[in-house]
Image 1 (cartoon, one colour):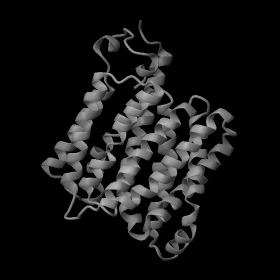
Image 2 (image 1 turned 180 degrees about the horizontal axis):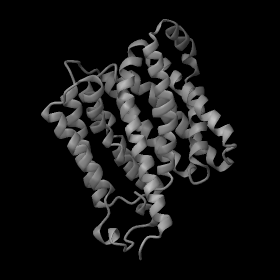
Image 3 (image 1 turned 90 degrees about the vertical axis):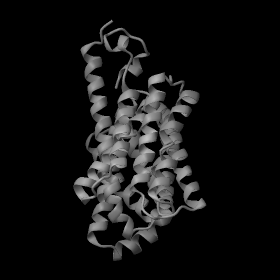
Length: 311
């Protein structure tokens, strides 16, 4: 049975939203290099969340989206606490304690955890192509991290923080998925961001003190992180997540390390080595495999549930 034009358009829109997300999330790594030199982990997380909340709040009011229904609040609260709030703080802190290779190894287990939790809690299917693609992408992400790490060391604290970041990211995504069945992507993202900002309010004094002494470039990068990689990218993520499974969306984020390599090359003049390029290629190849469908499905025969047909 051939897919309808409406289904095809929905698939194209979801794929475009996912692409916007991974590009903006990759760009965040470049901006964090500037903002992270002037702002501590908690202050940076709060400043980013406040910037994103303002932008999302204005859009919410202009579009008259209103409050999410009561049934969506559980997922919004859990994802807001774990992903928008806790994840940002512990990731910023953890990456100050370990080298890039260790961070890549630990943090990039997040998509794998999403697949496992999605299968257990949401009943997401785990087709062989998805598992194979994630394995290839994970190997590529580790190669990129190892090749780009310097002489920095690793601490037990840093590894634990990165592990907590990966777990909170995965749990937040899986909690967000059901909420998107009850509320719109803009609503879920806006109120999740507000929950994260409230959680990080204890860092308000630190943010005010550091903002008074930070260079303008660092503050602008913090605002950029809130407006684009957070407000816009988290909304496009939610839009795409509502139209596919958590497992497939998690696998898509493995394109981020490859894009970071490219952006660092173009924006910072950091010429990648052969191992870095090979790792980036593996990341993209793994994403392509995980997002592909069996030949029967691609030719129009429905071989998987409808939600799996949306890229």
